Image (cartoon, rainbow, N blue to C red; front, side, top):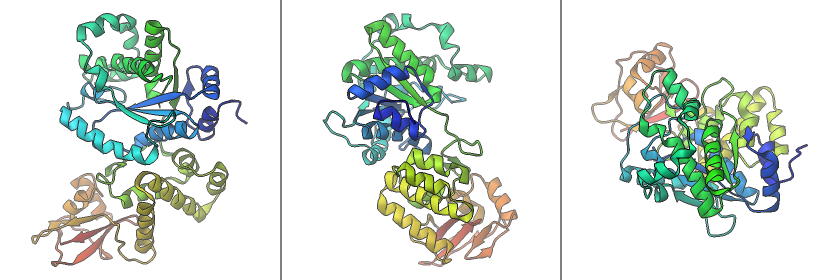
Length: 409
């Protein structure tokens, strides 16, 4: 039984979101007596977030479900600087137009998962470029700089990792933690935001913001982080051999998104059902107790529920139907990923990499040598094989038992 009084912390604890809380008793008491505005920041480095960000988005959903106010902070300003957390190297600089376009793409997922509006518990999306772009550099250094010491900044994992690996850490990136701390203070002033949430790698940045607000304004703020999210085999969440598992359908077909969840490790099913779906805990307990081949029922439920939340119920139903036709009937479902060929055809290795089934030509050659590639059921092993399709026709490509696509002309 949970010892928390507030619905917010009970919900987060029961579903496995809590790793660290700066002052659990204080936050619990606050959440039990009033609406707590809380935020998570997302950088706009691509037109979509990927599955690795989904646990953070779901935390904002839980915040709203528990009767509190989610604040989605798009890092239009901090994206221009670059968060060194978890990065081995500097990332490329984006233009203002690139960042604005990325934010527009990212907003689509939040609109499915959160209720936006003007009410006390309605979500709002803000861009930290609103205030960061207005800061004069000298004024920022004078007012905020004295509250940070280089000694302490050098102890943060995000900085130590780069230095230990002798990877360049630019002075621009080194300032990221100051700007994120300033965000928390600014949100507290503008929206009475009392809580910042994030992944465990953001703990230092969150504490910085709390301390800055306390020193400059005497305001009490709170921080909460989630555990580092990895799959049962230890790999990073949301990454596959073919690349990132994007949340937006413009970056990844819904069938591929559905298949990612359908193919998770048996050991991850219960945890992922709690984190990424709204199913009742009693139903999740029943599903994760299934054994043997029956656990596939739970995986299908997981795939359907997550896809319905992120892409819509119709996308989930179409993906499940496609999977049933592909695996059970040997057919080619309408939702399978596809690639168009010209009159000259395309080498099989290029087809595999073009579909994202293989990350490189070298991997494609290996799969061919392993007899893992089939065209309309016939095994192909020659890396130089030219795939040709009659005009208006199509053929089915399979890589192993789980990856299928349609090749058209």
